[in-house]
Length: 398
Image 1 (spheres, rainbow, N blue to C red):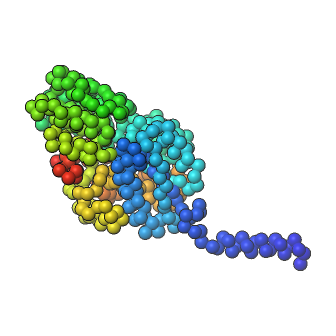
Image 2: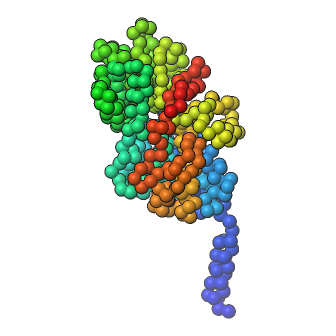
Image 3: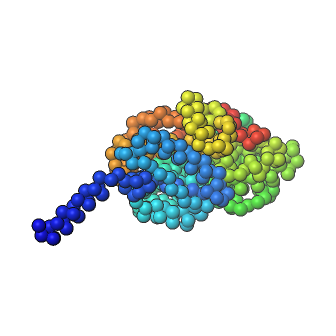
């Protein structure tokens, strides 16, 4: 046999042996990557960790069931620290990795808005478990790669206004951060008030980093406001609570807040001031009073085994972030299994075709359609308060 023929046969034999060896966990051919792009170390890091935990719990379940088409799913985390430019870099980095199926976003609407162009240029499935700005999903891209299980400001603004009016308030002042998230809520709340032939007593804007709200509170009171409608994240929300608590007791205004305050160390920095204020805030999920107790108890058992810092359901920090991320990953898994593919274009289409899913938060029937990529409505919202230990306690269920 000629040497060249022998060499060729040897090469073929080696290739056959290599192909027969199972891919090792963590190798490019064996894994599917889910990215997390969130604040993991700055003012809203608690939200990032809550989202991460929801993802981990869902991935564990999917992997125990065999993964997707026999491939295990792994989580890769990138920290944008609330910085839009860093978020854009993270999206582009994920797009260059092999076998990235989707990226899960974080709390900040301004970051998500800034990332939209990169998301759609790279055709990256973007799962939104927190950022509530209406334009994050109601964007100009067609087809859209953004899917949300979270609050939508178009619904949240009306919900919060309705709850305030039900309590007898008639002169709400809007206190809004000067971002796309704040502007989205200004539009929603103002339109909700117009439906009652009302308008805000005052619209007050503030920037990230504001550490005193004494002047804004005084301005709201001078305009005749009887309640504050707050749209803020934890650092600025904490500053507002401290400022409100410094006013004489009979001149403090009640506060109805969006849920951004729950994504950081809000309670830890306001513990001594909260008893002096009347604060109610938006939520979507509670492990304490779940809509489906059996589903919640099952997940909590897994949560407790995975994360040693939790003893009771009340100990779960930022529970909505965990619940939203969990349901989103389970929905992604269903779409990929139905598609029999990890091609993002194909899986994107199949996310719109899921007929139903019995989720942690609700029975999704369906979760998404080609016309609507928001899975939750105002019917899924609740109001809540902090108790003396910092647990988020539901006030009512809608």
